[in-house]
Image (cartoon, rainbow, N blue to C red; front, top):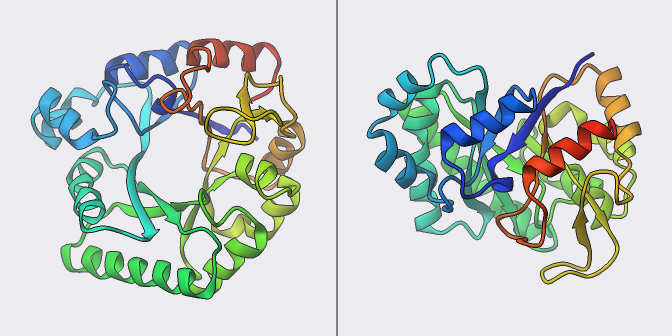
Length: 266
């Protein structure tokens, strides 16, 4: 089964929307998730300044060959601020106009303790009630980013919110959690809607105790992971999250995509 390859605009933060879509098309990648455009993570402000209204953006993208599959917000389920909640809500008209199903949010927290899980569940209840009241089509998926990077932690969250949609950062499970991504996948796959992949080596960088590298230059076990995703018929996006916005030392996303293709990495 062919996987739905995707890229995150985090890898080309200074690009416009059209430039991002053109880069994906040049590499025969049919989907993008939007986190940055024009060197900002304030996507709503960028889209408003560039296109005016959600309807005008939808018209602009009507004939696009690359589709937007997620808009990535900054809300944290644990520690959600009023500003984060307001930002998340501001994404909804744009997502619904484009037919984008998912708004990405972060897990937040540090330890996935009982207190943190309860707070995450309460933020989910807030969102779901608001979504029900307004009849919004877009929903949220939770990225395993800050505290939910092990099977056990993800399991505790899903026990509290069984029908939550997960954006699984497979690299974090492997690098931060020390787990075999194939084993993690088998435990959580029923809840996963979207997967992030990237590569790294165990050498400290400015922000992490590891360093991101070109696909195939590190040790991330991409081959067995992709094999199990194909075997299980995973239909969601598998996205190269090239974090150049946060790590300027990284080569251009265009180079990462070229190398990944040359090496059959992804």
